[in-house]
Length: 299
Image 1 (tube, rainbow, N blue to C red):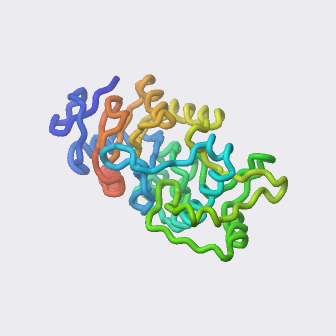
Image 2 (image 1 turned 90 degrees about the horizontal axis):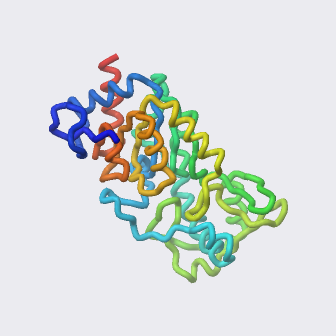
Image 3 (image 1 turned 30 degrees about the vertical axis):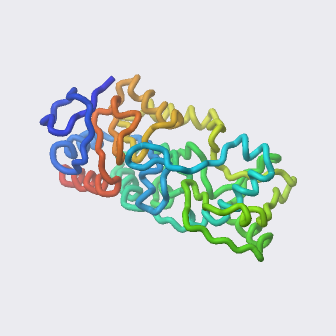
């Protein structure tokens, strides 16, 4: 296990684990040196999208926010649960769809433009990496901009479902004061009860967002693709993830077992800190923008 570089350690590897908010100086230069060797694989979480106005499940303390995400078992087992999900998501998804990539997303694209990036594994479902121009993105948990039929398996754009839901609920009006992670809007029971859901146009089956719900497994081929990408990495750069869930943390463990260097940039502690060569407790946008500047100065 590689220990983290502690702030104030004078740039010596193997110092006691610690986190730093520093985004300049020796630590940033060390990060730039690691990145400059290329073959960087980014593992991103919700923290990289918070600067775009999309909330995450955990704050800087790493403690879970008071939200109740939909589970796969509840969604597939209850028509009432599906009504609740689609009513809340019908409003909340618009917030996600309007979001724009921030400086952190653009910096990842900047690494790609400098031919230093091998690929991105993202736990996010917002599509903001692709919107910023990043290619070779593996969407570990799927994407909110697609819908899948649980009957025939057909995938369709979320915009088409949005149009159908608007038509089916032309007299439905609801407002929310809060948006939970993954585009889940807070609504009261009366607003949910009057919402009408629609089924698959082709087979009449149940429609589900093309995302991995809690309690649902990530498709095995997708997991294997991420393992393979991790094994080829010269550096695993974790951005904005507390790594609390095994879904992303397993790739950090996979890299650590193969002595692949790991750097973590996240606001707050993470489950993977003990595996990291460097950790930065700092805003993603500012840190990654500073990294690009350091790379350009060194180049």
